[in-house]
Image (tube, rainbow, N blue to C red; front, side, top):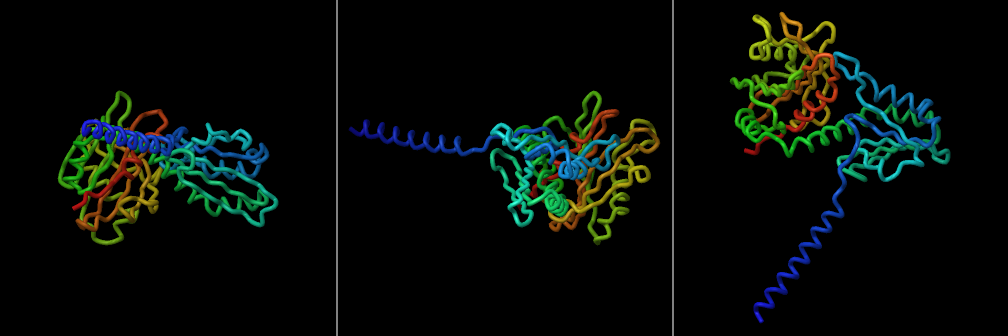
Length: 334
């Protein structure tokens, strides 16, 4: 009798677990779709896409990404009519929907995260006419770009997480007190006091991550001249060029470094610097993006930078991947 009771209990537990598993499967969001930096625009008709609304979207979202050697749009835009906005297209990771409704009193915007897939950001702007639609978009467009950027970084990291290099993660944690999601294929090219250089070299390209720190003194260190000087000192010392007497430097004349406040950087307040790196006494160069923050735990000013090299090829997507790695920063709990 006890034997049959055990079987019955085991059967009921199995049913409960199966039921829970089924609930998890049915409530889990599908993986979102879409190309890198791609935004799906949903319009009601061709006039919206070909007219003032479409022009405003293209002018902002497809503006050139600063700091790239060849002109590349910051985003790629695709559009579809609302009548064809089926479940298939609702899986896109970045969606902006346009609605003109004359019965509305004023323009309004609504947004949702992971509505039909994950990661995903859905934005709908409704207005009584095109003029008020464009006015609201112009007021909030920088916020929309930040939201779409966050989704893009999370999508990239969702690919990198399963293949992260545990040994590099441990080395970063020991040296700097924080981790980065660095996918396999990178290796530690140089490990000096207060400096680490990670590389991923292919036949025609090179992706690089540099982390360095120095004592934090005052807020002037966040200004562009100080950030450039620190970059030139640290990377010029530890990153040699391919020929004798060549070393890493920063282009300051043709493409001056652009410094802005980073949006929602995981370390807190941080400055983003975009520009072009160059090899002094040589002809190599390419884009870089860096994030500098003060680590309150250590009193150090820390920079995490990604730079890329691939002659005569587009570089936006590769630099986005390095940016996502920088945004994966997570402090080690003491």
